Image (cartoon, rainbow, N blue to C red; front, side, top):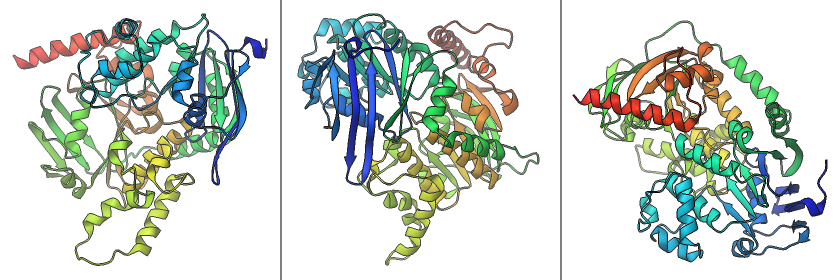
Length: 522
């Protein structure tokens, strides 16, 4: 049954927006019913963020109409949208860093008691209201933003990649709270690149592609393929074919590029050993906080190991600085692209940045050669530079491709990728999958930690599993399905039942880790 205009809580029709020659939105429409959780999906650059900013008054559209409860409305600012019952949680926390939480709440006239209620519901009941925002971790700031929005009971709550930076237990809480919004008079618009979350909480999904609404799908167990098809158009099949073509693992093992023997660091990394070979993509699987962060920081030279041995091409190495790791051929791609990039500088400058350290003699830089190298890297990674020269103007997926391009431009021996596709759309993910397989086929060694287990079997030749700061399993790609990886990540026997929820599993895992750490400390 098709909803009429009067049945809809929010309706946007024919929304368009251009920035010079760049078309951000061509003809986007969105119809949200009362009491539903509605997914807004699309590749990076499809126009999702632009549409959300228009709906919340952050930017003005060039054309189209917006109606709330059947009445056309023009929204001129986020404050006006908020008063009208439309609130958005963006990917970056909307808190003033040098103010404490209570002062931040005063600025938005947020009632304290409802805010505390939602903090408890979301698992952050011990938050100190006098803590400065800048001293809180990103996950806590995201929860504070959500609790603040829920406290004012908005008619329409928009969540842009709300769970991307959250650990499993907080993600579970957020999804439970979102799910409880169903059936009333209010609605949630949910943006996520994780299909499992869409299936868990959403009723319908509107899909954008290249600035246009290309379909609305009822979310069921079998709707994932249709959603992906709408998002990708014809590019999905070509990318899958290239991944499959490049995913033939090496049968002959050369000398390891990187060897780790009993690496230790602080209280989280206790005993990690592995070999990483040229021509392979080695996956790292771990729950939140199992020591994978410390491992990558040691390999990237930003942290010193407290024990164990690290060898590169058979020779022992000690890294005192990231520059030492880079000189040894180990380059790092972080999940947080904002930390890796100079946002106010151009794409060319960001990609060319590593090569300025190789200049031995003062004098003019060979701009022709630099430009040629950068253009080749941009073309190889299919970076969409239409939005402008500065990196901050690119979509999140294109920003991540810039961080990879700076290393690809000069040739890669060993690439360390820490959750490189987090918060990135499906099309860009597939482009990165293809690139990693192409790098391995050309002889590079790739170490890939990912929080999305599907990527292991799709991209990797094999995977090591870290639990409680130790490698507890190694699984070949052919056996690395989600069930086997989850069991290994939770350190469960193959015949043990999986916990019923992510939160229950996290509690089990935490107890097991604490027990392992107690034994290690004896």
